[in-house]
Amino acid sequence: MKKLILPLLFISGLSFGQSSLRPTIDQKAEAIESKVIDWRRDFHKYPELGNQEVRTAKIVADHLRSLGMEVTEGVAVTGVVGVLKGGKPGPMVALRADMDALPVTERNDFPFKSVNTAVYNGQETGVMHACGHDSHVAILMGVAEVLAGMKNELEGSVKFIFQPAEEGVLDVDTFGAKQMVAEGVMEDVDAIFGLHIDSQREVGQIGYRTGPFMAAADFFDITIKGVQAHGASPWSSVDPIVTTSQIITGLQTIVSRNVNITEAPAIVSIGGVHGGIRHNIIPETVELIGNIRTYGDEQQELVHRRFEEIATKIAESAGATADVRIKKLYPSTVNHPELMAKMLPTLQEAAGTENVILVDPITASEDYSFYQREKPGIFMMLGGMKKGGDPLKTPSHHTPDFYLDESGFILGVRALSYLTVDYMGMK
Picture 1: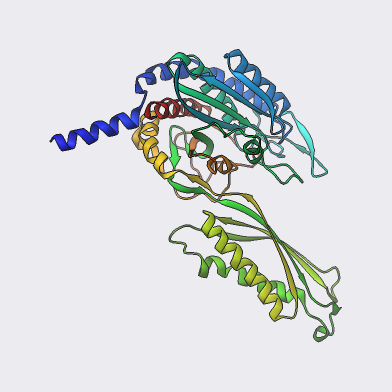
Picture 2 (picture 1 turned 45 degrees about the vertical axis):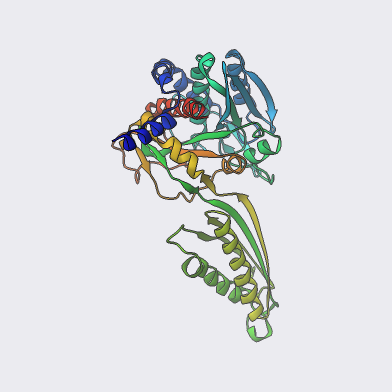
């Protein structure tokens, strides 16, 4: 019996850290729930595109200063970083929220419906928090208030990262998280935690996965060049259109024949084919554009290598050439296995064991991955769909009808606060 009890005691101490603070966290989170919802509605009504989050950033900075934090503004253009120093020595825990909205015209009819517009890619458009970043900001502001109210009891410090431009900025090569890392925001951090609201997961639930969780995202452009000719004499041409069709088919064999899909999926999608302007002319060039999704560096390298080999060799076999350009965007979001194992009991305490659900890999991407490349990190999905809702009928992210059940926000506040104090207690 002694051999059994000692390991259990060790695991309990390791997993629950400063669990004595949880009742206080619960009380404070409940007390500010309505404030979190009000913040979110304000941000939703006045959304701002990437690197333009001036109003949002000011509200965040003013709030953090009111809580007695050291605040730095203008990080990575419009980002805000606040540091809460705990009353006891310990690690630096980072928490992150993204602030930017999307060029989407909202169709909902809420009192807090977006009123903002902008010019994006030369077109007038509505601006909408159609991915839930407004809720991320509000939740993290709530966490800041909760933890600031118990700072003397914290065994460490907390860095609150409010990041711009997670969705990227048109014609700018970098993303908000990558730029924040470049400006040193992770240098003194020991671990980082973050969440993303999920409009198709029930409120009260948390989705997680160990290891590769969200996909790396890469864009590609291919220029296939042949020899132009009259459509009535195709033998005089090197037809880039026929060559392109063979390349498109060949690229699909990467997923079906080269990737071990029992380990992780991969995606190669063609987003556009552009070539020719007249019925009876075989053109000289065709342009292909699209995107690649992979999980982990090794799989990404495999897919990229096969992609270039297939495109260039098929073109060569036809007497044409293929100029392949692959642009890496986001790395794969990878939850640190050891940290995930340590913190999973904390998530289960926050939401209830039955509500913390192991999920399949997500083919969408997140620039949160840049933080995880610097220090161990966990990223999770927070339920934002009404209880009993049908995920197939609930508007998805990046759509004009995107909707969130705000009753799920309090769990986000509790979960991030629990993770912070428990991690501190483990060090």
